[in-house]
Amino acid sequence: MDKGGRNLRHLETILGYKFKDKNLLKLALTHRSLGQHPANNNERMEFLGDAVLQLTVSTYLYEKFPKLPEGELAKTRSLLVRESTLAELARELRLNEYLLVGKGEQRSHAQDRDSLLCDVLEAIYGAIYLDGGFELAQKVILNHLPEWDHKQVAIIDAKSTLQEHFQQTAKKPPVYELIDERGPDHDKLFVVEVSFDNEVLGRGTGPTKKEAEQEAARQALSIVGL
Image (tube, rainbow, N blue to C red):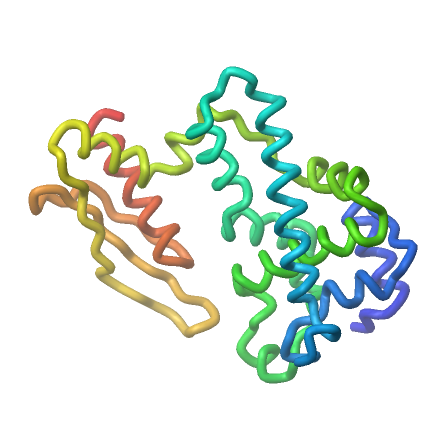
């Protein structure tokens, strides 16, 4: 499929932003495997977009939750801007169909990796900032941002909640163990168990060890009554 002007216009529609300088969008979509020189790939834009995203989300949470303490604000922000959240958003925006990578990365299905999808989304936010300024970039980011309630944090970040529970009640943390790893490199599935005092409390699966740990922790929370 040609990723030229016509399809970039389609992508602009999906993003909800029309670029004045289309070259910025093309650069934001270009992985290092196609342009080793810093001026020819999206890594510098990713750096910039990460800063714009962090400030936008921080401001949004500060204004939405005026009574929330700093620690809870930081925890909620970390969930909104973590790799898995951004990668899922990138898939919803179909960035995996537009990301430009070298032939080797195509063969390894690099366009489907969470890390690359997270990077290209941040690069696009950086490109929008360069093209239209902070206010427009902020508007696009907030339009993409999923609706989150800070009360969801304990469920979403189950691992931290479980850790805090055992630190308070037993002064030691639960133990996570990777018990299985399946599938090819581009489509891994990890299986993790969480236990406490040698008693297995939960088992989780996921495309990354972190997500498998979170799923195992969610199961454990129900076992311990949380």
